[in-house]
Length: 132
Image 1 (cartoon, rainbow, N blue to C red):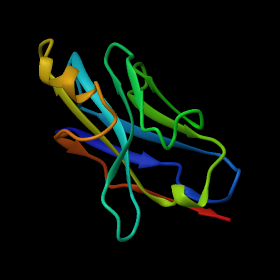
Image 2 (cartoon, rainbow, N blue to C red):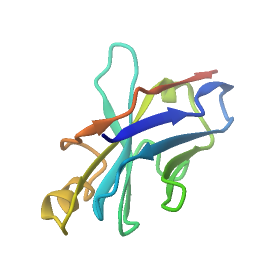
Image 3 (tube, rainbow, N blue to C red):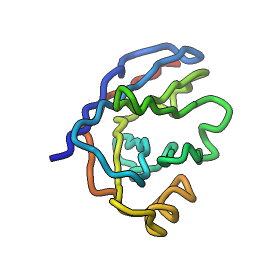
């Protein structure tokens, strides 16, 4: 069973940085899309960034130029480097994954945009709080 475990959240002042990590075990699909999402209290969940197994990346407009998504396939880790944090970045951050055992148009479409779509595996979340 796939497990996704986020870490690295915390409290930081505006302008600061945090690095989130998502360790994934049992995820062996050759073609996949992995992403970071966030949900603030009283707001809908929103996509932040996505990366596929070929290394293609999409960012939400709200984080472009400030956040960087990356993956270390050898260590089964997905990361999100967050710089120039703002108070509005405060949220619970989740990583998610969806994959196939074959080259899949569904996975391509999932990672073609930073929002929407269905991911089958989710982590438990890590809290990020940015004070102004």
